[in-house]
Length: 284
Image (cartoon, rainbow, N blue to C red; front, side, top):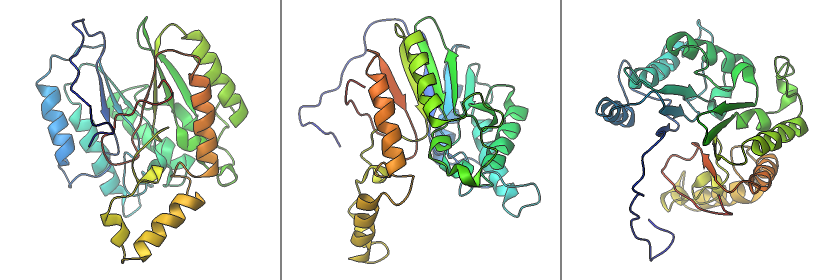
């Protein structure tokens, strides 16, 4: 599906590639001791590539369904570990750098505690700095090269109800949402001559259900009329912070987009909606 009827395939410029980014979103469910179809396809693809150490694989959040990494004694612990093991196994033999970032589902296992458990599990398997940002903090800026800056954001940190996570910022330099935006602005200024890649779970634009665009089939779930009513309430109320219509999510989006207009080359990469989208909007 294309937004414009006159879409035509564009040929790539005849220039050397400095860095390749492999983007994997919402990969948090695989058969026990196996791989989902998507992860198996990804694993095979990587094995066939001449992977440089300068390349990146980024898992864009919701790394475990349905609810993050619980305590070891929890009945769902084995299933949760299985989801992570499939993603870890997919990059076995990959020479580049791998980064996991958290999504909203990763916060559903005891909030901050569950995110830290996942960080510990990933870094034990893949090494230090493979889970970003660390300690449940909101932001990490990475110098990929002289021409590329990678800014990793835990968007769920911003969207969370902090009253339910009173220790959320204990290990973070950034302790308020206002300071967070100041840090973003500072990073954008420092990297003003670079291509800036924002990696975050929640998208700034989406033509999927989290952006209020619903499939024909969804209007019949659970029943005709009730499915349409459900979609209407979800679209107009912003009742859940997983949807762009949500007041806090929308405020976050607008602020980030405004700041990003200062840079001529900004790319946002996200997961969240379970489909592939390529959107060009507001010079982004």
